[in-house]
Image 1 (cartoon, chains in turn purple, orange):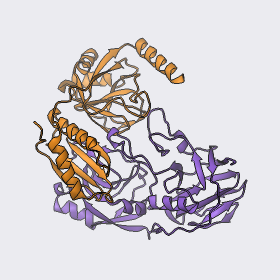
Image 2 (cartoon, rainbow over the protein chains, first blue to last red; image 1 turned 135 degrees about the horizontal axis):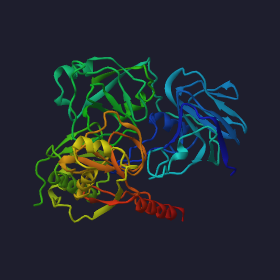
Image 3 (tube, each protein chain N blue to C red; image 1 turned 90 degrees about the vertical axis):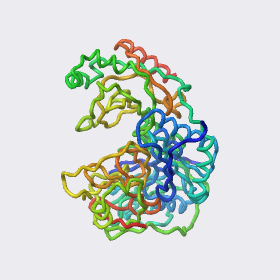
Length: 291
Length: 236
């Protein structure tokens, strides 16, 4: 089996290698990590015949330029960032062959925020605590999972080529506004009726100060600018928890969120809804409704 | 006494539960969290995916396809009934060498002004106690240690630093801790340790809830020699 090499002539805005993430180490402060849109990631892997939780690339908004030194089979799912192979536009949600020397590029963002690129085979980067997902840990053991310009990533190609479609639902790209069902969080009763009504009644916009750790919303649920929402003694949190910091502007925790926090937890979003939220960009709008 | 008093459990999302004890930062309550965490771990409930022990709460993540909330609640009740609410002072005390030299203790000068104490007095107050590890969070391997002497409970910076160096030792109110890795942070930095917060195998951590920690002041030359010998070990 000839190893395949991918050369990243441009890294894109944020291209990382993700797999299922790490669970079971939250008691040591280790965040879960893993793909923001887990559903699309699974789908991309299954399309190329990989196990669903194998490493793949998560590409954010502005895509990389990737030269394939060696032939391969790939699939892309999630956001439509106008992918092309040697200049010809290609489809999402299908496995396709790549000739040796071909260059994958991206262009205009049409829908969504994150594209998943799976390669038939096993991406060779070091793992830590069972996962390749990048994390800020001593010794930087996962530095190769954060793509920089010029990086060369090795892949052990799969033995056979598969031609398949996958009957998994496609993550819905929205009309720039999502309605998210939530369950009450542990501190929801500490909020006033007005604050809870503002949380459930308002249309929020996603701030540009949003990332894999959390999505910050611009609008506050506090009655006035002078109101400061009190905190709590630090307690556990996980992706999907909606915190209210002192400013009253909600924070939706995502896959790289810290494992504990001192902000009140007003609501929790279910895991499958996070996939949909992962395709929202700054400026998109969010409304919450009680499940 | 076998039974853990004063706890409640509620659903926390569709696949997580939250156990809460008395809402306070106190050794006796934190012991209860540790006791329940240990009891649940020993019971090997397969459906539990993760737990976050905190100051006075325990978050439990579970596979909702394997177990439902009600069944989990019953199993947690059984664990609580058998948990030993004993003090964890039997766990080892770990000594962490810290250099408080001004090149590392960048917030010390300001702290002296704010507290009206000399830098030496601040160092004495910081190195005197046997701190308890209350919980880990914020960063992999970041242990929240308490409780800092009331005369040096420095408030967090109004604007966090973009980069706090690995090994920095800081204070935020009644808590003190070591940054295990370079990261943004708002704690007041009073020194630095050459000791890694990772265990020797690099897949476990030096500190766990229930450990006790003492800080031992060292001079700059000792800091450098410890740092050199750790680097040599790494290269082997």
